[in-house]
Length: 509
Image (cartoon, rainbow, N blue to C red; front, side):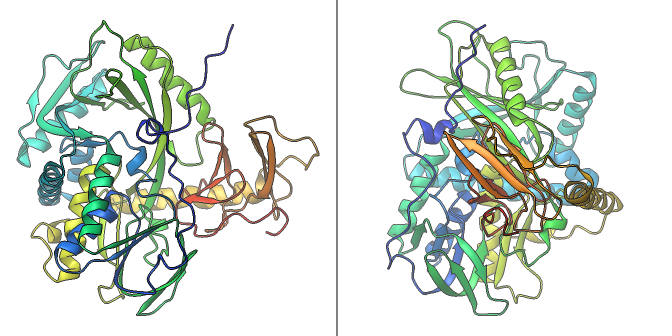
């Protein structure tokens, strides 16, 4: 039997442009040595924040270790929606109706602002019906509960007799006039306005550290910046001064793009299942004919076995239900959820309002990014929006404490099991097969060995964040930490997560 060809490991958005999300080193004088506001991260959150600051007369400096949009923004399925899977019922369970109401108001304000920005910049936006559906009885109960909570929060959610999908559905709800787009077109529009308003964007400048007192001296690979105020818009806050690692859970999910057949039923709107494993479906316009985007199979980063198997299973599901051919592009993205379920946005305690973060968007970063930007800029200007206090009024919930304890307990167990208990293979001179990686050696100096594109690399298997032993990601050919989601290339270069340093050469742990 002939093996199916593997699609390019790139998101549709980057791949069809013939680009990669990497950026070369900036020019020697590109990074200013001082800034009133330094924004770390040039994804949707960072650039929305930067544009709002520039409009308010405070054009910031924005830095990113890779190209703008290189992170989750450029690897999302880019749905700008207020109907967000089971988010609202989980918020209601953990934090109550008032927080749900504040969350919906924040997301609606962010959505409206971003749509207006894109209209002004002539960015193509497709209005869509957002659909939440289920194929099981348990999932149907969740769909009904989500509709109940959403309507109570003021969303015009309607029941659907036809979910517009080519398979039986037990329950479905919809919300009209939601939106989808190409996220890199959005990034382009925002960076253009930022530059016009006097802001500075420096790509290829990775943050490696910072001082512990104000003014903040932030070290990057392109030099230091002394900033009065700093916004960490990096998904997981690098320079973790707020102990977010104890409250955030990292997960990865997968997506593929296919050419839609000339005949057959085209999916209706932007659909998301509440069953496990999750399935996300939307279309995307393309000069050569519309594309089908399918996503899902999320799992905790660095855990859950072969990532290749998860991508292959998603591909098989898409081809079975939509009669598509081989995938054109295949990619994945990383997201974070807080133990409280509510995104964490605002100043860190003890920093005098001068060090701010935005994280915990739980796969809904397109809408939450713009909402978070308004909160961040409101905090910096001393005029936070009215809904900000509602999002911050969440008390301590026993469920949240229990969830956090379970998560941190599993992290601690994993640290011990990987470093001490688990028997690792003895070092060998035989390199791994192409595309494979393994961890070998003793508990106090394990090595991560892999072969990618004919080159065998050997680096320390110990994550530079808090010492977790990394796992091989066989679909993305990366080393992923199962503790807090830091990720590294095969040769040890940091990709994302709380770590700020690369994996050391093997033997230097």
